[in-house]
Length: 74
Image 1 (tube, rainbow, N blue to C red):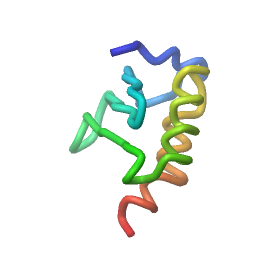
Image 2: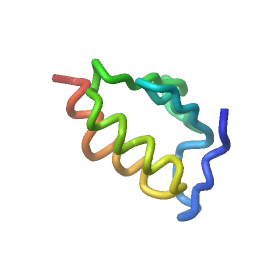
Image 3: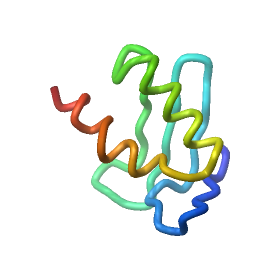
């Protein structure tokens, strides 16, 4: 896995791994610390946004909290 840069210093994300159709995210805390997001759920557009944020090292945790969690609960 690639360590998450965490440029804000406030992220719960510690590492990620990108594949062609998914992103695996490892969190510091939470009931479930390992999540696999793929092109089926939550969808390709969302996963592509997550990949970009992960590589930039900023905004991934916020994006997941604000947009992805809602889609996964539906």
